[in-house]
Length: 459
Image (cartoon, rainbow, N blue to C red; front, top):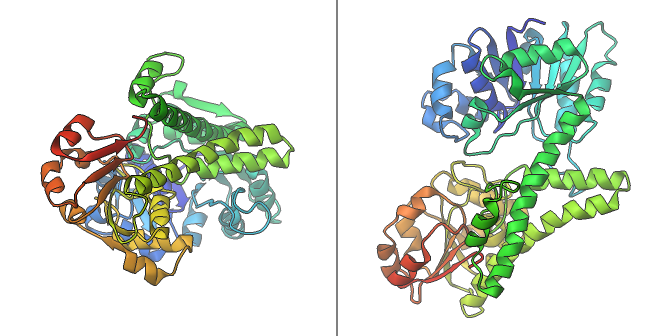
């Protein structure tokens, strides 16, 4: 099928960057991203590209280059679906908060709504591409909905999972390790492969069956998260044996069978994918009565939760077993550097634990605003919105946030944190001045020389 119009349903962290790069590399194809959230679409259409709803290095430049030429953002979902030959489903698939599978299974209601919408609107043949992270066998449900419309429209279902890392998403798209396309129809697969082939070498475009493609996404994230939990488990052992986790990580990372990536000890992983996808994997395994498999992967999550709790417990015990009424300055709220995404950020859970101990939390993040900080804490429902507002203050300046603080907790590995005038910060803090480096980004010798009581992970 010749593709001249692409529709992407969902203007989020996956749909936005992916479609922007596809538009840049395929100027002959009209790419339209649609979303029911008018406010989000308006932000994507903002003349000031520095105010896009998603921050990714390099994204604003690509949007500025393509928007209005062959990249468009719209709320006209039905019209765009009808005009397109290929439709990407890139909507949220959060973990269920209700019913069967609560707390583990993926909530597929948005995916199903998309499929039903496509079925109602389509009058010509369509290629439907799963871009959202989905449980294995989801394509079967989409296929069932689309193939029972009673019309003569032909639908081909493809799985094309994303393997993007937030903070490097644009670079990952421009130079991917691989592009994975799963499907039954060779023609449909090659139609999508041709779009990626405009910039990705053919040997990096993998064709599989749809089930392998769906499962590969969950498996990739599970393996990466497993590495983080593994080195974090060793970090606790290092602290009790006077070993240095950074030295251990370097030593094992030089083994070509292991490699150095995802071996940075920290307060734990966050983001929208790792925890959600592992829980999904656990749920799927349990649904097939594969309990040993489920228990294995669930331990990755248990260790990650333990690491976050261990960090906050250490902070409390070091501050003489009480943080009540004390100002704790948190540097960073995003789950990782170079993104404004806060989903499952360790900062949220550490802050919540400290608030339970009646601490006063002060937050600074270069890309996350005060509204998002409050919304993240309110979502936990641990206390009233008013209490969160009273106990958590947001600052636009890193020096103001640390003024009169009893301790600083580094929650995100933003590069700018390394460049601060730490002598100035030390002088305006309560004494003794504590730093809890949850990302191991500062130099311990330099910090202790200034006068800080410095604590890090695995050292």
